[in-house]
Length: 194
Length: 285
Image (tube, rainbow over all chains, first blue to last red; front, side, top):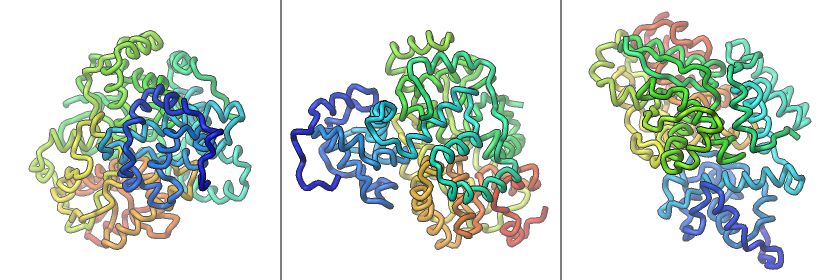
C-alpha cells in the first residue's frame, strides 16, 4: 500500500466493474474523492492505514491484488457513518462488503491471506448454519483454536468464567426447528472453516 | 394487555439477557407485552453481508415471513438486528425478483409492509414523556448518565427512517424524565467497534477506549446504551481498563426509576455491578 508508484502491468482494469456488479457496490464510480468517508471513520481515527478514500481509489485504478491482499480491508466496523455522510451516495460500507465477498472467495482458494476477521466470519456463519442461531461460546473457542494463540486463550479465561458465572454464556446451542430452510438458504455458498 | 410482535435476536437469550428482562419489566407499566415470533433465526449480522448478498437478505427475510400478517410491526432490542431487518425490507421492496427468489427458497410469502422498530423508537414515538414521568417512583436524583446511541440504531437513515442519525434526542428525553442528568456526550453516535471485539480485539479496544475515557472525563456515573453489542463491548473494556463504570441498558435505568429490584431488571447479570453507583444516589434494594 505504501508504494510510491503504481505498477500498471499488474492492474486489473475490470476490478471496479467486478465490485459494481455486486449489490451494494454499484455506486463506486460516483466517488469524487472528497474524503468525507475517511474523516468520520472510527477505524481511521485509531489507525491511519485504514483509509476508505484510498481503498475506493485503488479499486477504481484496478489495483485488485493490492486491495484483496491488504490487511486493512477486513477492519471496517460496519458503522455506516461513511454511508450516511457521503455526498455522492457511494455507500462505502456496502462496497466494503462487496470487497470482502470477493476476498473471502479468493482466500478460500488460497489466493489471498486468511485474516482473523475472515476466520471469524466463517466460524460465525458455520455455527449459524448448524443451529439457526450461532453459539457464542463455540465461535470464541473455534476462533482461539484457529489462531493457535495459547497466550490469548488463557488471557480470555477469567473473562469467560465471569461471563459464565453471570449467566451470559450459553454452553448449549439454541437450535431452531426448521434448520432445513437455513441449509436451503446457505445452499448457494460453500462454507468450511479452514 | 397490548401485545407486540417481538424479534429478540441471539444475544437476548445469552450475552445480554438483562436487556430483555428489563425491557419486558418496564413495558408492563404501559400495559405492553412482547410476543416472541416463533422459530426465528439469526439475522446474520454484518457477517452474512461480508459473505454474500443473497445470504444477507434471505436470512432476515425468513423472520419477516414468519411474522407475516400476524403483526403490523416487529419490535427489536438489538440495534444491529433492527438495522439488518430494515435493510432487508428495503432490498426486497426495491428488487421484486430477489423477493421472489427468496420466497421460493424459504417456501413462504414475505410481507414487506411490516414495520421494524427499535424499542427506543417505539417508546419515544408511542409513549409520551409525561407517562414515563408518571411511572417514576424513585427519581434518578441527578444521576449523571452519558447517553450512548452507537451506530446501528439510526444509521443508515435511508433504510431506517428513524431519528436524525447525527442528532438523536430520544435517550436524553427519557433520562431527563427519569430524573437523571443527561450529559452532553460528544461520542454518543460514534461506533464502539463491537464488530471487531472477537476477531481484532486491539482495534475494538482502541475505539471503545475513547468513548469510555470521554464519559469518565465528563464525570459520568454510567453509560446508557441501546444495543447488546455496544453493551458487551463497552462493559468488557470498562472492566479491562479498571474504570468500573457501569454500562446499563436504557431499560434498566427506566426500571430503576420505576422502583423495580436488582433481580427484576437483570442487574445481577451485568459484569460491572451498578450497586455502588446506585447507593451513592440513595437507591436501596
